[in-house]
Image 1: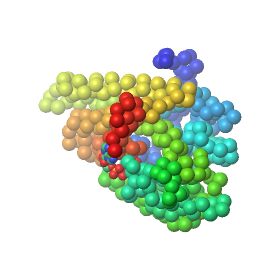
Image 2: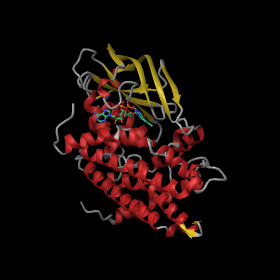
Image 3: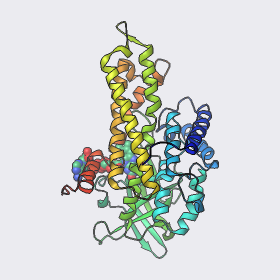
Image 4: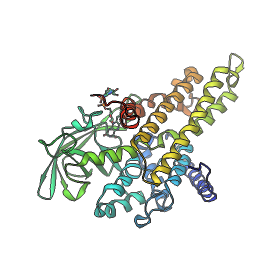
Length: 394
Ligand SMILES: Cc1cc2nc3c(=O)[nH]c(=O)nc-3n(C[C@H](O)[C@H](O)[C@H](O)COP(=O)(O)OP(=O)(O)OC[C@H]3O[C@@H](n4cnc5c(N)ncnc54)[C@H](O)[C@@H]3O)c2cc1C
């Protein structure tokens, strides 16, 4: 692909940065990092506000076909993600906009597309993901929650876990065992579900940094109309694979690093240890430069995936590669930042914190993308057997 941006793309990029810079001025003081959108009412309301602002400009439907309100290309979507990352802004529902919408476009019925795409594009509804269970994470196909068909609805029972943002989400996409006697990978159904349905209980899982982002979701005799199936009954595994590729290739989590790295370089240029500027320490210089190169590499990888998505050619291997590279880069950055800040790296956002407490936030949060969305060990397995033709491990 040609990695140069066209004049039109450069113009759009300018517009994205301009709007994001304005939105940043309205950001609540307590908002730091991606997870803040789920942590409290203030963060969630700001997320919704930004979503409506992007929605009215058509920016939540970048790369969609025009008949569903689409504008621009997948490349524009990446450029907007860069701008949002730079200003640390939410407003693009990772579950609805980044994962479900492209899955509905690929595998949803016309009825579902017409019902959900306009609401996702306007920022009116937000989703969460009900996949993992206490005994089914990496081996998701072993899940035990059931969705038993009764006439024109499914009766759903079971427990899901680690559900990011489920305490605020309006709707959920989930996967359930619909044929208890069926063969593995041909016994699951992918369903959309209104989170206000009777029988749903959401309980928070406190994260180690004290935030409330993750949840357990209990489903007791929840009635879901059969029209909310995505794909075919008992063939939900195929839909899971389509959605997982969009989930893993999403670069939201890493685009904030461009600004974070600029801020860290500035900190090193302005602060001394033992009478010497941090910026003169050869080891720090080396590590910051290495991260700068990796950020450029991940940006290039993201452009490559966007190009493939434009041509409907994204593979499982590319998605796994983005997921591994981006998550491990975040971890590397968090370690570097806490090393450079020394004891200040442990101070939460407050008047005593350096760099607005981002080091503490980044360090405690950098484990999340390594495990969520399918662990990096699993992604390496996918690359080995699917991408490189090595034997599949039992
Ligand atoms: C912060 C966070 C947010 C999350 N958000 C969501 C969400 O919104 N919705 C949702 O549905 N789920 C979510 N998850 C769940 C996530 O997808 C699972 O945690 C993940 O898939 C791992 O599953 P597990 O926790 O059951 O670990 P396990 O599958 O039990 O794995 C334990 C360890 O064994 C390793 N392992 C397992 N199998 C293999 C193998 N075949 N080869 C090599 N190593 C292996 C794993 O890599 C891991 O290190 C989230 C998880 C976290 C931590």
